[in-house]
Length: 411
Image (cartoon, rainbow, N blue to C red; front, top):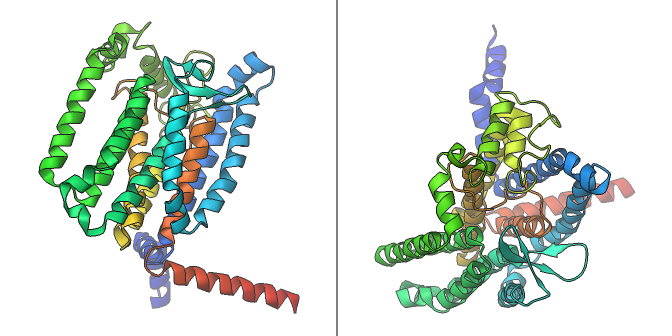
């Protein structure tokens, strides 16, 4: 074998792949493309799985198999332009809108308690009905609004943030009120996600260890209180490790989720060939869509989803770590923490590692409000990625190249 052949083999081998990956990650816009690619693939896979998991239910309820898929496609079509606008929005505009976002989200949360507007679904009063064909879930918008506003407040404090009281005022009362409204809706899963998002951001900003430990203790005590004051939560906590002990009641969803993975085996039954979606597994297109994915696509499909979320999480952390802007760092950490925490909770719930708490899988599960807000959050991440070192220069150079190509075609 010649030297040229040997070097060619080396470039094609594992070492060559690692070198190519290293070169890609050294590019100023690597985080931007990672967020765009991972989120785009998850969104596309979600559309496929929503269609696959709802064909029977849609046919039974509406007479044709694509009802839920078309609604999800409509929401995605609405969400993508919003994300595009946000990704190109100057950060000063996003920050200026942060207070209005929190006020608006809080007002919508409060509106769920008004008779005639609030709708109870799945035991939680976390939906708004304005009389149209679609329902709105304000708690989803509240997550993103809180992240943007908290990042803006902390960034404005500057060096004052070194004093622990500045970490709590006004963030603690405002966030506490939003979380209290969510708990009042009987939506403990979403409230827990909000708390974990805020703890992530406080950790990133550098909260004193004693204060962080105190907050963790308070959160733990409050969480235990809410669990043991609700009989249905006590049952879930007592049975989630062995769903088959109460198969016909509290363990039904978790047990059938396990059946889905067992039926799929290593390689899956094939796209569209799930048996659990035929009315056996409740919420198969929302909270438990990962179980249907595991049944139909097997281990390769589940690993693909996990890898895509890990890539999205890595890109978000990379944005937070590489920037010198406090707002960018906190907003990126908050959005990344939200996606990762909610993903872990959903996968743990579907795999019967965690109790069933009713949390969808970001970008994949069916749901109008959740898909619009999570895609909008991806747009925020894309905007934040443009503030990494060298990213603005790379974007300017790319625009110049496109302009030159257009001018070349017109001459």
